[in-house]
Image: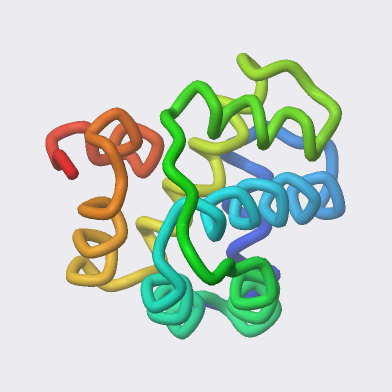
Length: 130
């Protein structure tokens, strides 16, 4: 999938006004995700995302992943985009379901396995537990 196709899907799922808003939301969600998963998993995920997204993701990785729950994930996304955590839940789902459509099943399972089971629904995979 190309970068513009990825953003078009995020835009449609999140019902955003334009591609720029979808890009801002995508960057916020992936930036917070990069804080939550291991550096190796960031690299693996980045390798399967369209160029600019992969580069942004690797630029956001940390030496050690932080441990935080789904509520904190939403709060951090909301803070980055200047919205409420409830809105950030929709934002995260729009981006992460698109990630799930983009990466291989094996990569998705590895990614979800690093997160508490409450995150699986954001990827559109409520039946997977991590």
